[in-house]
Length: 342
Image (tube, rainbow, N blue to C red; front, side):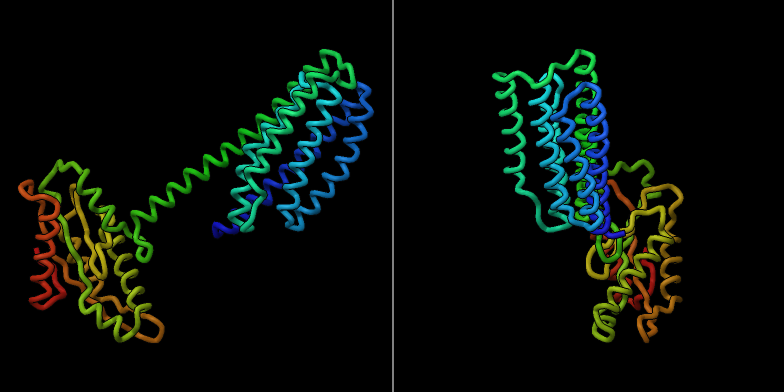
C-alpha cells in the first residue's frame, strides 16, 4: 500500500472514529439529561444525533474536510451548551482545548491527502476564544440547571476521560508520524534509491566510527562493472539501471555479512569488519556475475566485474585505504578486467 493510500485510510478511520465518538457521547448525554431533567440539553442532543448520523454518511462518501468542519463545530457548540446548562465545574471547557491536538493532526493529514486543510491558525484561534468567552460567561451567569454533586462527578469523569483519551490518541499519532518521517529522511540521506544499497555518505560515516578489533579480518573491496558505458550506449540507461540493480542484489546476497555500498556510478564498495568474511567471497561474486545471463526486454547480456581489494592497515587513514582499493581496481582494469586483484 502506498503512503497516499495509507494516509487516506487513516483520514477515513479517524473521521469515522470521531463520528462514532460523537454518537456515543450523544447517547450518554441524552440519558444524563433525561435522568437529571435538563430539557435544553436533551433537545440539543436530539439535533446532534441527527447531525452526527448524517455526518457518518458524509464520511462514507469521502467528504472528509466537510465532515471535519461539522465535527469541530458540533464539539464546540456542545461545549458552549454544556457550560450554559451546567457551568464550568463539569469540565465541558476541556473539549475546546482537547481539539487543538486534533486540529493539528487532521490539518496535517488533510494537507497530505487532499492538498488543502482548514486554516490552522484561525481554527485554533476559534477554539481558544470559545474557551475564554465561556469562562467569562460562567463568571457572571449562573448555570441553567442546579446539578447534584453526584451528577457533577459523573460529568467531570466522563468529560475528562473523553478529552484526555482524544488528546493522547492524536499525540501518539503525531509521535508516530515524527518518527516515521525521521526514518524516511535518514533512509533518503543514507540509501541509494536505485540499488537499495547504502551510499557513500553512509560508508564514510561507518569508517569514521568503526572500531577495529580484528585487523586481519578487515578489508575493503572496490567493484566496477566492466564496459558499463557500452551497456548504456547500446541498450539505453534503463538497461544500465537494471544491471546496476542486479549486480547490487548479487553483492548483497553473496556478501551478506559485509557492508555493501554504491560508491558512485558503476562502482561499489564492499567492506568487511567481521571474522569469517574471507576475500574468497569476492571471487564467488565475480564468477556469479560472469556466469549470469542478464535479460532486459529482448536483449541478453553478459556482464563482468573487476574488483580491487585492500587490507586494513592502522598506518593509513580511510581516504588512503579507499585509494589503495581503487589502485588495485585500476590495475585489474588495465590488465584484462574480469578479475579480483588482492
